[in-house]
Amino acid sequence: MMETWLVGTGLTSEIGQALLSRLGPTCRVLAISRQPAVDPTHHLTWIPGDLANTRELWLERLVNELKSRQVAQVTGVVHAAGVVFADRVTATTQDEIDRTLTVNLRAGLRLLQGLSPWLKSGSSVVLVSSVDARMQSIDGPAAIYGAAKAGLEGLARQLAAEWGESGVRVNAVAPGVIASGMGPQAGLTERITRQVALGRLGNPEEVADAIKFLLSPQSSYITGTVIRVDGGLNLRY
Ligand SMILES: NC(=O)c1ccc[n+]([C@@H]2O[C@H](COP(=O)([O-])OP(=O)(O)OC[C@H]3O[C@@H](n4cnc5c(N)ncnc54)[C@H](OP(=O)(O)O)[C@@H]3O)[C@@H](O)[C@H]2O)c1
Image (cartoon, rainbow, N blue to C red; front, side, top):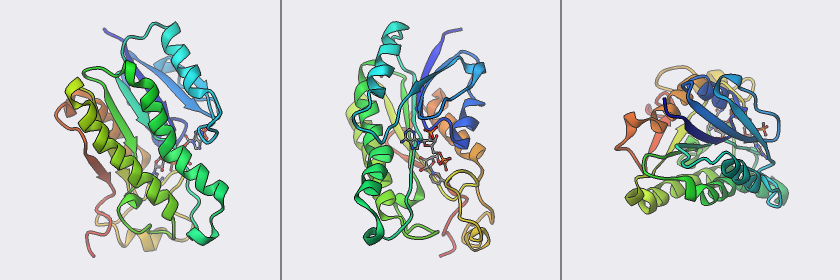
């Protein structure tokens, strides 16, 4: 069977790990993260990189890896790295603003720009956004994060239009409140689940399923869209 190549950020998160566990045996993965990403079943190669540091050469490392392995096409890209400093804008430092915009948004743009020579007909890009891109954050102020994720969704739509004629699809997944990493702060779960139609938090596997669908040929006519994975958050209001 033919090898496929997935390049991802944020694959060390629970959502990322759930995605890795869903990939087929012919999928090779290049994972950019600060801590080593490990997943022997998919022949994962770790590309060390701090996405918040704009002077770091993670993209150059990634490109060298693709060239040295003579990869002709990157079939899937997932930008799932994210960071949030949940506070009022007036209480957010310049460093926190820079980190939030850089990790969530700029790094995704830099990654896709650098990977563009490897994105060909059939390639699929999934940007991991958040419902905070379109609504008030449910567990406290997070304006910079919301702005970064809204930018990511704009990027998905614009690149879908730009790359559509090449057969490259670009979509976003917007999780609601997920019981993982950036999930709800302690004590808020009950109040939050009252606002979710399905009456519970989501789990990382449910987000990974949506990402996997968008990466797969089963979604071959879907591009420029955002799939919310939020259990019907705020449908009651
Ligand atoms: N959990 C939720 O409720 C929720 C809701 C909506 C959206 N999301 C989105 O889902 C994605 C995963 O979130 P999570 O909740 O699972 O968060 P998490 O556990 O905090 O994971 C964050 C991920 O981002 C990577 N990352 C953060 N800063 C980085 C940096 N400077 N350089 C490189 N990688 C960096 C981390 O990799 P390393 O630490 O290994 O470098 C890790 O893989 C994020 O994009 C988040 O915005 C989550």
